[in-house]
Length: 70
Image (cartoon, rainbow, N blue to C red; front, side, top):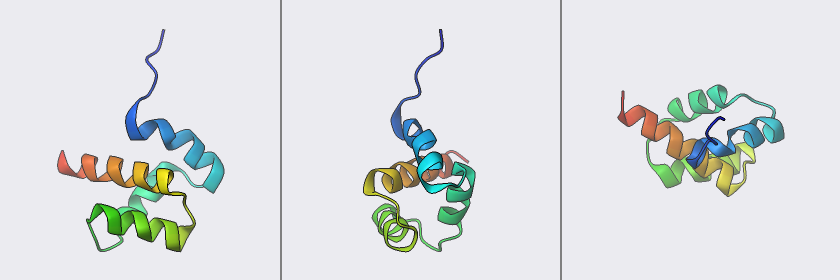
């Protein structure tokens, strides 16, 4: 039995399906945006790329958390 994905990553399949880009591309966009502020990134993804708040928030949270552990 596999464990269910939890947290921000649980949104990834629906993000890829709805917006037609792999999560890796979204992460690259976030990292190249020029900011590391969570809510600025969420607002940017919503206004510039048409993501919903939950999807944008999940991508930003996961990406910033990854970057903190690098």
